[in-house]
Amino acid sequence: MCGICGELNFQARPNLTNLSPMLTTLQRRGPDHGGSYSDDYIALGHRRLSIIDLSDMASQPMIDSELGLVLVFNGTIYNYPELRQQLQAKGYRFFTQGDSEVILKAYHAWQQDCVKYLHGIFAFAIWDKCQQSLFLARDRLGIKPLYYSLDQQRLLFASNTQALLATKHVNTDIDPVALHHHLTLHAVIPAPRTILQGIRKLPPAHTLLITAKGKTQQQCYWQLSACRPPQTMTAQDWIIQTQLRLQQAVDKRRMIADVPVGVLLSGGLDSSLLVALLAKTGTEKLLTFSIGFDDTGHEKGNEFEYSDQVVARYATEHHKLYIPNPQVLARLPEAINAMAEPMVAQDAVAFYLLSEQVSQLVKVVQSGQGADEVFGGYFWYPKMQQSRGHYLQRFSQHYFDRDHSEYLATVHANYHGDDYTSLLVEQQLNQANADEFLDQVLRFDVTTLITDDPVKRVDNMTMAWGLEARVPFLDHHLVELAMQMPPELKLQRSGKAILKAIADPLLPNTVIDRPKGYFPMPALKYVRGEFLNWMRSILTSTSCQQRQLFQPDYINKLLAQPDAYFTRIQGNKLWHLALLEAWLQQHDIR
Image (tube, rainbow, N blue to C red; front, top):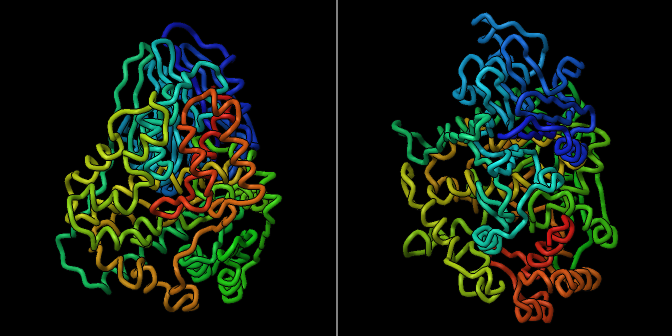
């Protein structure tokens, strides 16, 4: 994993004045090495986290003078050994042992179609000196980020928004459509938008080709079908096929590294199953990591009682981190500063604090993100399935943080407009190649909502400490299989029935059949004490008042009863507003 950045200037040869602040901002993503390249209309930068082929030959930007190509790459290509052999058979010669050079050769061999051959998580840019063009690509499920800013003079791109903001060439006005999404979809702003008008992100499963004259061509190279397979499959067939693909995702691919690999063990089914499957393959000295916080009211701040059972069964080398609330509050601004976009999920801060400790022992971890979306684990899926009405109504009444009328009462009149989120969701839920309503919902979740919520925050918070997170449940081969599965099979046993069947012989029943849990941080859900004082200071600050983003009456209502207003999926609305304003202030956006 790494941090990448660059500038394609349509008018003149770029100097390194823009590249230098971007590289400085990206240093935490790649603490092992920094490099740059400048030529013609292009300047490329790279910060390296050394995981595969630790030699200096694998440093980037990677220049292939024979092919006339230059690469900056963030991610891991799991099938690079097979691709290397295939390309060698075509006559290509390699000077490194890693996956980066495989991308260069693949691009030369197959041009824009090269991404169809790549199995992994990636965001990369290739400068073609002969064609005078820049090729940008992002993996199928958007696990690795790729942001850009495009105007008449230049294209800037980077692994996070902070790097783009550091150039001082970005329009930082609030995007009213993105604001509607942020306050309605649990802080999800689907690509290509971000909260800022001047920054966009390449959608998952897309490529973007830009010439030195500024001509652009964007393509989608992969789409997910949610239709039943042509052959009839029994429940046992689904279990067998799922276990096969999950096992492949967990060990053969996700363990590729020249450094140790650990597991973030929350104590829930998903991360516990990863530990069990890794242990099943004979992985030695398996390192696991858990985090816990203070209880607040009736809600517990840790799940150690479950993670401890998994550790005991598989004798992992376990590391348990406990952080009291005063330390959490002291580190909140730091965690917010690490966010490429404002993220309201409580576990964003938990992942940030946990990653700090984990990064001192390993460079790579596996994490359980994606299992709930792929296999139907959240409590709102059955509610949607049982509801009646048109697709949008069935979705919105169980998921939207705010209906449009409340949104209008939340934000200043300057940001009023159409019900943009409903328009987006209705369009997504009526796409072709899905057999029934819940197929549409799960596909929308897997291809869009998850990308800009749990996937994004895990990448942000782990990479803030130079830690690579791999997500086996989002292996695209596994996802393709799971999307064909009848939804009723997924919803049995209170959700994720197929995964629970796989786990039955591997994990304690108390872990498998426990209520769905999260990385809990109760202080950001039940807001009181110093946390309430902090949020009040943010939302009544001069900066917030001058910004005129939120309606004062709405803020006052939430501050008067901070524990009374929750979203439909149990997020605290006061925290949501405070987080957005704090993020804008932290990034000096006025």
